[in-house]
Length: 328
Ligand SMILES: Nc1ncnc2c1ncn2[C@@H]1O[C@H](COP(=O)(O)OP(=O)(O)OP(=O)(O)O)[C@@H](O)[C@H]1O
Ligand SMILES: C[C@@](O)(CCO)CC(=O)[O-]
Ligand SMILES: [Mg+2]
Image (cartoon, rainbow, N blue to C red; front, side):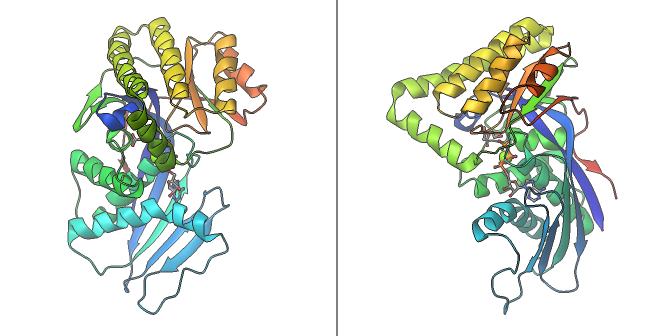
């Protein structure tokens, strides 16, 4: 068996706009998905997921005579849950040319699902890395990131950027603009996360922004303006200027909100963080529900969030300098 882990991420700036070629700056954080892959003697795929919000499940399928997978969860939930793992295994088969090999895949993840912390990218990166190593191929990090991106691209209906997958594969803070992906020097940032306990569907949220952008020039301008925020944010990051970073994060949240991807609970966590004295706060990832990220070197924001109605969990996140880890 080969086991790899990969980190989740928060966006300092630029989610959604990055899908249309604007730059974005995500940072890997120390919450991880671990994926174990073991070759089988038949061509079936058996997936055991420990930490899905479904309380874990096991599914086995793939034989020619098999009916639908036999599990105790609704089919739509299952399809959503299986998409990235299936896609990652398809990449492993394509890379190694071993089209008929079956696998036992075990996933354990500390990253809440669909909450903006990049669980899909971490699962795709770790699964492709472990799967290829199980078959004797060790990928360069750039190739791993590219393969994981293709998985996200397909599952998200042809609309994805390289940001989440590159960040998860390489770790640290990164800058992604189209297919130009690079690592950034970043100071140790005082990141605080607020989680509303909910989730958003990345594919649907991306599609919503796409149609607004097609319908209204001012929505397209909003997307372009997010790109301008990112370019300013890079300079603030290089200078370690927390106050300026925070101001730009606040602005970025406002524009994401205008594009319809915030929610009442995300907005109230953002305001709780600002009221508590955070340098800035914004939603992270696709939005719709899930997490916000705030900058605050003191304990005030974490404490305020823990008393905020609609916030299910508040915690400090450490930047993860390491991307994929090859554990076994
Ligand atoms: N522990 C896990 N086991 C199996 N599949 C998982 C696991 N964690 C995430 N996934 C897959 O990732 C999907 C969630 O991805 P989605 O892109 O919607 O959210 P996210 O990556 O958490 O947030 P964002 O993209 O906004 O950062 C799940 O539906 C599932 O397919
Ligand atoms: C919303 C989005 O920009 C980030 C999701 O974490 C989608 C993507 O980049 O693929
Ligand atoms: Mg995702």
